[in-house]
Every structure is written in structure tokens, then in C-alpha cells.
Length: 139
Image 1: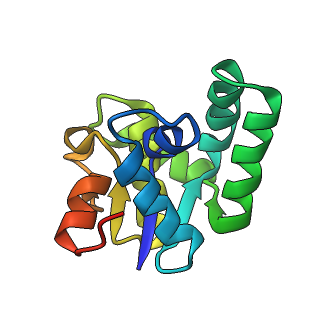
Image 2: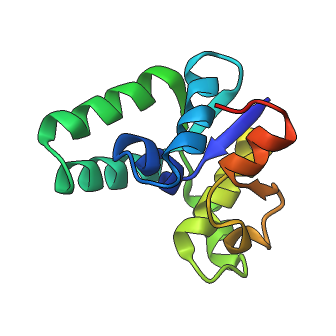
């Protein structure tokens, strides 16, 4: 199963943010272990690096990027995809880009803690906790 992981889930893990760390780490472990095929939108890499560095060290930021590059497929959007992003009725431009990335990657789910932000997505959004509970894959 292919899934797109939203930046908030990655940050839960790399910054060990509670109370979300456990379920987010559970999902990330399923990707890193090969049970799920993880996709990371290319535009998320710069944000991940910036926030990991801002709230940690340069080594933390580099380690986070290295892990994502090792275990995730990175999907980039082209100009026509960005035009599609602009046309979507999302309140948040970045969420619309994640949605188009998920569609382009053929993802089954977008893993996020903000399901309501993806109400207009063609790919359903699910929280890590809900997914792990639904598929009995508790961390």
C-alpha cells in the first residue's frame, strides 16, 4: 500500500512531539520496515530540514533528511501539477499540494493529523492512530 506522509507526522517523529509520537512513529516504522510504501512530497523536504534544524541541531536536520531519502519515494510536482494545486478548493496551499502529490503517486491514504484539511482531496486522509487501530498495527 502506498501512502503519503504529511509533514506534521514526520515532525512528530523527528521532534518526538507528544502525545502524537507513538502513533506517528508506528506509521513511520511501517514505511521504514517496508510494510508500507511511503511517499514524501518533494516540497516537504525543505520544511522538514528547516524545522528540524530550528528546534534541534544541524545533525538532527541532516539525520531526518537522510532517513526520509533512504526510506521514502520523493515525488515532485511539475508546472501543470502546480496549476492544478492552485485550482483546488483548499484553505491551505501546502495541503492542496500534498493532495495532488498523493493523487499523482497513486496513494491509498494521506497520513496526517489534520484530516479535516483534506476534505476536498481525492485521496482520503487518515490519522496515524486511526490507521494503526483500523488495521490492528498498533506501535
